[in-house]
Image (cartoon, rainbow, N blue to C red; front, side, top):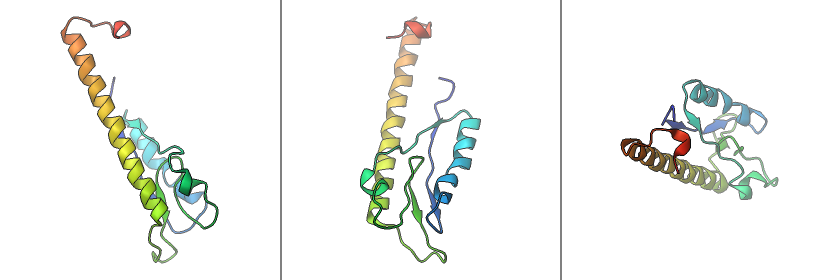
Length: 119
């Protein structure tokens, strides 16, 4: 693996629109530009992502919240739960990559230096 760095992003915007999704793209482009692996949120929080009863954040690119035009709005419980879930997912993926890197290093030290022969 060329890079062992992993990244993701969280955003907040003042209103619900495509803006909260678009605000997540520039950080992702920087992560990819520097060879980092981008961990998206995906559709892992359907309770908030598919709820159309009120305006909210949380796109598949990362957790987000709506701040209001003057910053008066606080995150909804579902937005906070989605952010916590994303943090757990991010940590699990990072840990799995670390274990995989350690296994690859051990195999290399044991003499298996051809990547496609790894089990």
